[in-house]
Amino acid sequence: MSTREDQLLQTVGTLADSLVDDFDIVDLLQLLVDECTSIFDAAAAGILLLSPAGDLEVIVSTSERSELVGLMQVEAGEGPCVEAVATGQVVSVEDLREVGGRWPKFADDARRSGFASLHAIPMRLRNSILGSLNLFRDRPGVLNEPDAAAARTLTDIATISILQQRIVEESLTTQSKLQHALDSRVVIEQAKGYIAQSHGLDMDGAFRLIRAHARSTQTRLSVVAEAIISGSLRL
Amino acid sequence: MGTSLPGDDRHAFAEALTRLVTADTADNLCDPFVTATGVTGAAISTLGKPLGSQTVCASSSIAARIDEIQIDLGEGPCWDAVRTRRPILENDLQRSSSGWPATMTSLRALHIGSLYAFPLFVGQLNVGAVDLYNEEPGRLPSQTVQDVKVLAEVASRHLLRRALENLDRVEDGILDGPHSRREVHQATGMVAAQLSIGVDDALLVLRGRAFSSGRTLSEVSSDVVERRLTFDA
Image (cartoon, rainbow over all chains, first blue to last red; front, side, top):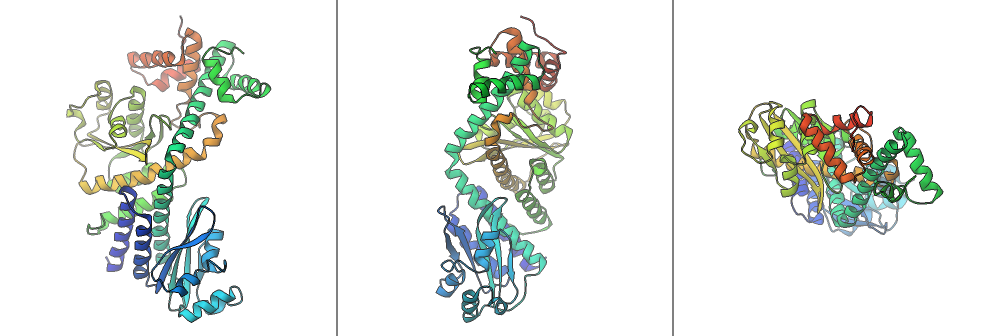
């Protein structure tokens, strides 16, 4: 196996470890951009994240050079890095000299910085888009397909780590919501069985009767169901 | 893991992890556990509060049965894994001296060699467990145990996300699926009406009948819902 492949697998492993152990999200993302520049032969890399308020921020980059931060066009609100976040699609620019018509300020800045091509990968899990991982290279060309797939995988795992940390922070309110949903579901099924038995109906018929009562009294279905099985409501 | 030497087995793990990360339905969550570890089979269930006890996926009918036994009886390795938040590794199931006598009797009748239960949780929140089994007894290598913990983290997130997505579908009732427990809840309501008792007692009546007749709670519940079985006061 090639050394490069070893390095890729080790990075997968390190990201995966972050799912189990306590970790600092910024440290993890810094490691991701550092490893990505080396694995994918990029000159620089950076990650944009959407803040809870919906603003894009450069959260980590391989260089503190202002041009790199500027290149991710947070302030201008244009360019491929922003577009990857906005569309949730990979944006690959083979030759930055050819995008002057589309993103003039970006194209100028990129040329001055000596970057020639760019690969912007959305950090996305289904409907949630968190930001983008951006790989800058100093020669024209696209990432080959295996590299593009590997970069997507690393990005996916990092995305899971971020989402996981956010869920942990919200887990207490989540718990009571889930508990309520579970109780409601169980109690609705039990009430269907109760009414099916007491009224000689099938489950669909029982459900229609319960729902009709809930609608006519403008009461939530789970409240009606609870009243039925506790014996305080007779339909 | 980050320090271990990569090899072909690391490829299998990396691929399984990728497939799990990108899985779009709950049905195919079990498969990556089997391919990453080389065990005979796997089953995943949500257990207890707050997600409710229900098998999500099973790679074989034996795997499904392993989880059904433990859900019906409310005890066994998967429950201990959830409670302790640690893997429960039964390397030799036929000779194990662990607790859960009723569960062990039923599990041993499946003629499997070993059973490994890993907890699923996200932060403070309990999700359930993944059960892996082998036909032959034996220990899981420590690297495999570590790998399963990682896969379990990803699976936990999937299940939690799915539950959150279904939050606003409460009024539709329990989601159907091959391992749905919906009939158990319906039968509980019917028995409560038949015997004029509360639902908690009605569930005990159903469990008692299942245990004394050597059948699963789902089978007995199905008989009640289909009106082949009635309880008289």
